[in-house]
Amino acid sequence: GNSVTQMEGPVTLSEEAFLTINCTYTATGYPSLFWYVQYPGEGLQLLLKATKADDKGSNKGFEATYRKETTSFHLEKGSVQVSDSAVYFCALSSGFQKLVFGTGTRLLVSP
Amino acid sequence: EADIYQTPRYLVIGTGKKITLECSQTMGHDKMYWYQQDPGMELHLIHYSYGVNSTEKGDLSSESTVSRIRTEHFPLTLESARPSHTSQYLCASSDGTAHATNEKLFFGSGTQLSVL
Image 1 (cartoon, chains in turn blue, purple):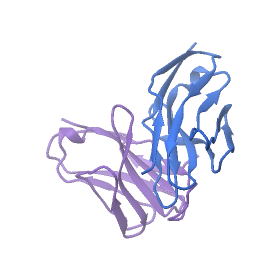
Image 2 (cartoon, each protein chain N blue to C red; image 1 turned 90 degrees about the vertical axis):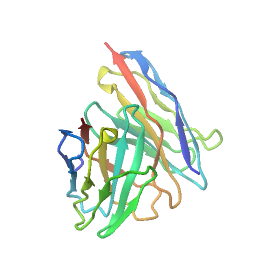
Image 3 (cartoon, chains in turn green, red; image 1 turned 30 degrees about the vertical axis):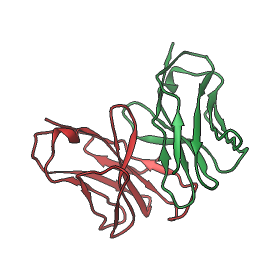
Image 4 (tube, rainbow over the protein chains, first blue to last red; image 1 turned 120 degrees about the horizontal axis):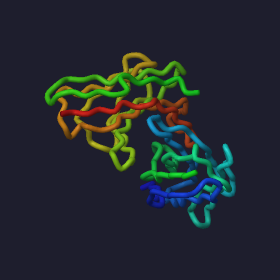
């Protein structure tokens, strides 16, 4: 079945540091890939998505590239801010299947 | 900004009480979902609906029930709450078709339930 594996957190960084959160997937067919973000006390929001191989999703300085050869969709940001502190979820959908979420990675950014 | 609302935000109740968690969306979405989020943050799909009068159980077994009498409303009910039901409950909706592979989910802010 479809599954998503994320790196465990928390990821602790200083402001302006470079961020990478790893995400790999297993899926049948040709999945679409997503990153959702959950800020403290809130529900999840879609951060970015990519629907086919080599697509790059980007939003708010975050980027992720759909790599079919390595079945990965790593999230990156060149310079994080304190306001980026949140939980990040990688997710995929494929064919008739419902959205499958990873376990979430907490990011803590200190001033 | 998402137009999906959950009430209450926080609920503390005693064991054995019947509770209903409300979820409403004003976007006209056909698909709606309930997720349970454990303290480790992992999301578990417990119920979903593809439209009025459609309800299905999700991947995680749950003692809760849902109903979908109106498009905009998808309440979740626990007939007899227990401490093991303590969790964060997130409602979501989507405008995707039943077979869409790139649907975007809109989430409510969640209900944090504590059963004593």
